Length: 224
Image (cartoon, rainbow, N blue to C red; front, side, top):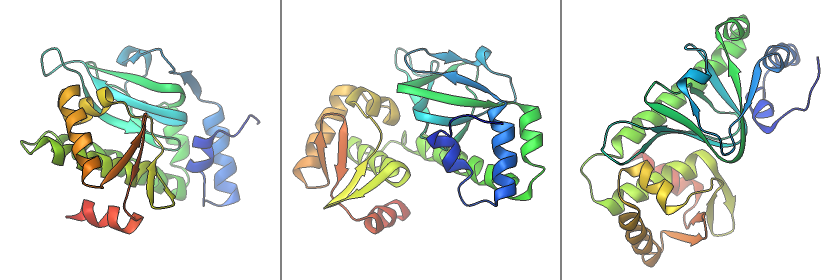
């Protein structure tokens, strides 16, 4: 058994016993690893029952159906996160250099032999389901500024890194991508971000966002 321990694998096995860690790595290193940087991956690229573990980078699942001429991001995942393989009308896309490990049915059965790893899988799937529900809620008929604000709070909670005077989102976000996440046009999102900057909620530098809130404030806002 051997191989370089990716950021995603390291996060997935963090906190489990040495025996469970070694078992998980034996199983996961034997799984197929797929690069998704710049190459969209459709449902046919994965087994129907597959789970995907993000090894490196960031990936999104984009719906290709639904709203005419507009794609919608239904799920996002950074290193160590697990998500379902794309459905027939969805596509998996990497944001920059990204890679996922494909956990098929056999690998999943091997992982859940360990109660600790089974619990880890359930935790990850519950979180993925919660984020998918949050993504759906973002399309509710609310004001565009409120939708953008809530999505930035969700991203900060999931991928934020505490820095001086706020929480930086470690996730590359263009206005076009943010528009897909909240079901708005890019122009509308640009105006919403400008408004949020004027109110002192966020500071934007290129595709990097820093919420001018403490981590506790981010969590409190999401609980409202």
